[in-house]
Image 1 (cartoon, rainbow, N blue to C red):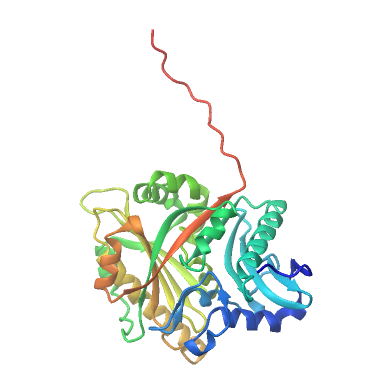
Image 2 (image 1 turned 90 degrees about the vertical axis):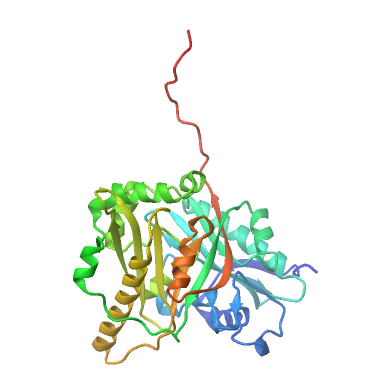
Amino acid sequence: MSPRRGGRVRSARLTDLAALGELSRLSHPAGPEEGTLPVRSLGLPVQATQVSVFSLFRMPLGAFQPHDPLYVYDDEGHLTGLARAERDGIRDEWTIVELDAVDEGAAGEIRFRLVGHLLRDGAKRGAMRFHVACSDTDDNVELLLQAGFIRYGEERILLRDATHALPAAPEPGLAAEAGIRLARSRDALALHALHRATTPAPVARLEGYRVADWERLAAGAPIPRSSLTPILRFADLETWVQEEQDGGTGLAALLQVGVAKEDQPHYLRVVARPDHDPGALIRYGLGMIGERSREAGRRRGHEHPHLGVLAAVRTWEAPLDRRLEEAGFRPIAQVSILLKETLVRIAQPALVPVAR
C-alpha cells in the first residue's frame, strides 16, 4: 500500500507539536499495551530494563536548536511520519535521530520519502556528512542503504542499571598514580594518534576527524561520536585521558562522561589501546559520575533519580566490552552505524619512485 496522493513532506510547524509528540510516543512504546499500531522507527525498545535507547533522543520544545531540522509527512492534514536531525555547525554534519512512521502498509515508503527530503535539504544547506544509528529491524538498514548510506560498523549498547549504586569519588592521589587527568587542548596530536591506533583505517578515513576537532575536546565537543551522542545535549560532558605508563610518552586511553541534567541515564565512553587495561579508568569514570551528580543535586536542592549509566562499544574495540561488564554493565542492544557523504573523494597527487 502506498501513501495517498495528497501526502507530502514539509518542515514541521509549531502547530504540529501535539501530533508529533503523540507520533513519537507511539514509535517508542513504554510497554506492550502501547504497541498496537503498526509503527516503524529507528529505535529498539528494551522492555526488560524499561530503557528505550532511542527514546532518550526525544526532546521538549525548549531543547530544540533553531538550526535543527524537523520534517513531517502530512497526509491531507494527518501527520503520519516524522524525521528529525541534529546539526553540528562546526563540522557541517547532520545526525538523524528520529525517523518514525505510523500507517497501515505505507510506513516504509513514508520513511523513504522523509529521508530523501532530509538529504536533499541538507545538501542545499552544505551538509558534508549524514550520520544515523539504528536497530537492524523493520527494514531500517535496507531503507538507509537504498538512500545511499553505507554501513561501516556496529555498536553494542551496555547499561549499568540503577541497582548498582554509583561509587564514591575517587581519591585524587590514585588518579595521579594511574596517570589519569583532564584532557587539554594541547593533547590534540596525542588524541589523534590514539584514535588512529584504535580505529580501523577505513573507518578513520570515513569519520574524518582532524587535529582541530581534538583541540575542541577539552571544551566539551562530543567526539569521538557514538550512537548515543545525541543524548549529550542533556548532559554535562567532561573528558579525561590516561597517560602511558612505564616510560611511554603518549596516551593509553580516553574517557568521556556525560552527567545527565534530565531524568535519563548518564553516559560513559572509553577508547583504549588494545594492549591497555582500562579497568581503573572505568572505575574512575563511574566515581566521577557519582560525584558530579551529587554536586548537581546539592546545587538544585534535589537529585534526579538514578537511571543507570549507558555506554557504547564498537565491535572492533573488544575486549573493552568485557571490562565494562566486569564493572557491572550488561548488553541491552546492538545497533548499526551508517554514514552518507556529500563530498566526492579524489586521490591526492604524490611523488613515487621511478624504476630505472
